[in-house]
Length: 229
Figure 1 (cartoon, one colour):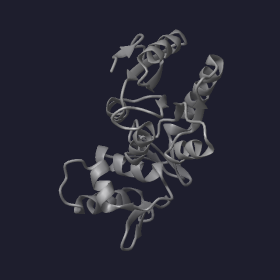
Figure 2 (spheres, rainbow, N blue to C red):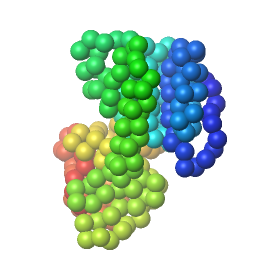
Figure 3 (cartoon, rainbow, N blue to C red):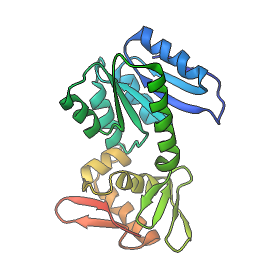
């Protein structure tokens, strides 16, 4: 795994590139660095997963055929941990089934090798725009959650500040608003290290106390899903 390329300019666009072909990977690092991106290169799925979970990015490029952990599985695990950074799957697999698998795993776009450089640049620019427009602010019905500031804007215009754990729980629900999340999955994703699933119920209570009883819905016998403000 290579370190961060380019300068540490806070205004630069941040890109995670997960590509096991070293030559192609370093060529793409140079290409995107010249375009003003700060690029992290991971050469296997484990490294890419670690970077995706521990650092913030504006876009991701994920190769499908990776050692250690397949690119589709990397995406699936990131989405399960509420990482919503827009992703493009870059791969030699070009069947309809492969494309569907990539999109179902959480990718926003899919590009088959060999590819045109200009097209790749344009597609990543589109991912970056999507991230600016959508990924930072997660919709909560008529309101929204800003994960960076731990702030919820209510439909009335009032802003409510959440604790770190409250924000992570609400973000996990809001990232997949129609999905019913089990207590076990929420404990593992949001409250790493906690042994009792009751911690999920406790923080659901805190969220309801701050944002209203309907913000989280209980699905009896299963778990929780996002409600409405």
